Image (tube, rainbow, N blue to C red; front, side):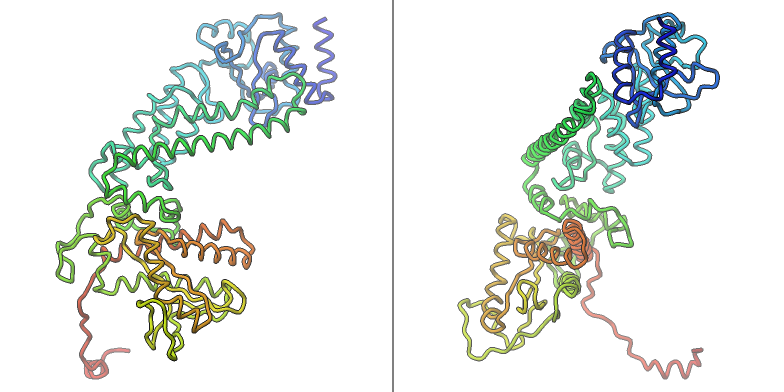
Length: 547
């Protein structure tokens, strides 16, 4: 009977459908109490080729009853050949075959597969993860941890965490290296406290640096992986209904991803709120600014100099000091204006013209983008002189030479001029520190509108929009609406995704404002310049300078 079955399999092996193969394999696995793995591409792993001297197959078998697999069972050679011949149907040829067993089953496995090219081992690397004994897993994780640290790729240990359980203790050396070596080298600070480590581990959008603690994330990552692969596991072990359940399982998988993403978002938000409560008030204010939309874009972008997304070492560390209210190294005791130097003073000191440069950088960048989608774009346009008009607000600008920062025709509506005025304020100034950030943006929006809106509406018959920014890159409500509209127009003009344009806009603005803030901190504020008082032509002539 066995000979007839083997002959039938050899004769019809290439004419069977994949569904029929799966059905036959499942029946044989139940008969022989063994386990069949699947390959990277979903095909069956080839076992039988290496039973022949010319075979070149690789597969990974595991005898582990604790994970749902069954013990190896000794059968006569013809039945074993029948099973292995069937396993070889429609498989991808790969170099070697390994059988991973528990230590107590190693001798029986060697006897069962004697005379074949199947290698019996206690552990093996499979698709970047370790399968096998605990000692093999521990050794593998140690090597992987070192590789992750030296290459700086957190995705390496993230993959390990998702594919292997109970490895938190094995990742302690990695966390020690991050805490004691990586973070001090990154921030330029001699040490990192436990509180600092906790908030630096948060995601960038939540105020952190996104350098997660692997000992805390490994267990949740593995549970998420198990939950996501549950539909696939059910599909593999089901009997004869793979194609029928495929669409259903894809739908279930998408639903699982949405649920897991929502749960993960809530978990991270709760963790961030817990850390926020124990922070000092000054640092809480920094976190409020860091969590504003777009203010952390400079951290999430890759440092590519060709696109302007880069900072040198000193600028990066200064940016971190501004972000987390850390003390700045190597700063003068006094500002060029004669007053004591401190960060808030540097951000508001008019000496040196840095505040004007900061304002003009945003104005010019915005105007250059408006030229892509609007007509009659101009910077510093002079408003029409008044002819006896009066305004409701005492602070309205009534100067004969009054100017807005930008004018563009057709931005909000066709044929109508839109006017914009930029303001950048420092929310940590002494007069602002007691007010919430949202209230400050609202105050500056209203101040600009009282100054320009009625005059532009009644005299210019245009529309006015204030563009308010903080020194750490956050935008006010009116500015956010404006840049969303601008991104929408650019998206239509360039035929690109709105999200792509908006992300680029936020990132460019974040870097521009951050560089201007660093310039205010480190720039040279000369109270006067020294022009060259000499006759250059006379000096060149009398000195017979070679031209």
